[in-house]
Image (cartoon, rainbow, N blue to C red; front, side, top):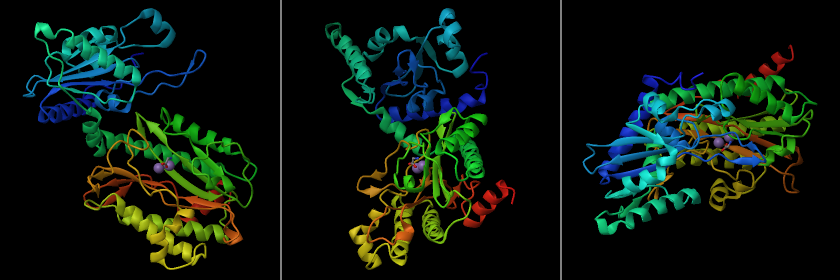
Length: 451
Ligand code: GLY
Ligand code: MN
Ligand code: MN
């Protein structure tokens, strides 16, 4: 079956528009040639590869997800004669019998709407032709030593022809910097996919909540999440799911997922699916036995209040830092009220003593990458929020046993994470379907157990 059959007509338009937007940025920067390779395949161990995932920048501009592919964009200084050229694997019946369908250059050009396409084997020779007399090379150095070497060889091949009057590009510009700025604000096609990824991921969290009970293992819960992601069409989990029972919830990147869940403990699940190359990122924390204890409810309510304050601070023209600052104020006051900390609110914030229980920030950009592309600061200032940006809101509180901490709170780890789309009116939480009010979680778990 043609793997591209679902990607026809209008679906390409979004990718073409993104290439045009990059061309416009390159034109403003004096034109030149951009080289954007996809990701290499990676061997896991003998004859077994890691699942292949195309490079996010490449995928953003092409929609093309076969390995061994490169996008080249040539823009003369007026922008009038811009060309998008794909280099990809040739068709090969023998390989297609073993590994599956390949578009081949001609098929890819037609289906994905490039101006030209060539076999990947022609890349080195064609690059040194294409580099000649270009004002600038738009390439992001330092991410892949193999590609850096290949680009350097193509440059040197042009330099070697200087006596024939050919000139190599005099400047190198970071094409990822332009793409980072573009990727910060999602277009309609991206938002449609992200909403669907969010929908699937909330369903996975609900499925896990219904499944959890004392005696189940963390990996069994992980399997429920993966089942729902895959069942509804996600290609992968967007990152390794964190399924952390009891004290494991206080390990921020716990991925062992191999312990039994015990009565009386909380479970923290941080998991999201990846759909058509877009991530969802959701955390829910809830009691293994379906009923919050008093101390668990105290910490949970505090984190939920902090999240509400942070969400309130997500609006256009607020800065990226404002949701974090809003969450911090609530968390720090709550830590004082629960006697986790002593002193005044100002002193706790000034000395950052809250970091003992809340050591990460509240937000990151979300998109093709779970920690998505895009700057967080513009010069000295935090980036302003703009409609179309998507960021997580994920305060937490992690309490390790210590003599000066009330024992009732030992090993309670809570994080609540949702995905916020900045709108003209404020923000829209696209992951709300996963319950997070105490009463809603308890009702859902009660219902799953048959009342
Ligand atoms: N799941 C990764 C994060 O929350 O940032
Ligand atoms: Mn996150
Ligand atoms: Mn997360």
